[in-house]
Length: 93
Image (cartoon, rainbow, N blue to C red; front, side):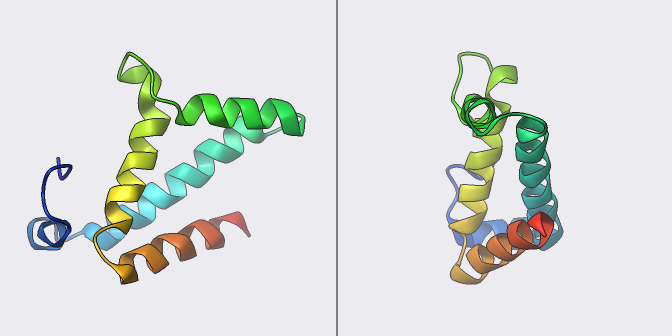
């Protein structure tokens, strides 16, 4: 939705942006953990890369869409970037 909007427009139009950012960050950690669970390092790496790749169908590109969302949220300001990193770090502890 915000792909073509200026980053500053997100806060103006989406008042729950911090809560959304937290949920998106947690979802990314959960999805990566799910793909890495009980696998060798090599198999886990392949599963994570496949999840994050762009595919022909939207359903098969969910990881790419999630990564794009995090990138878009991070580009909306330096504070947001630090917030996303802290969410990702907290969820990995």
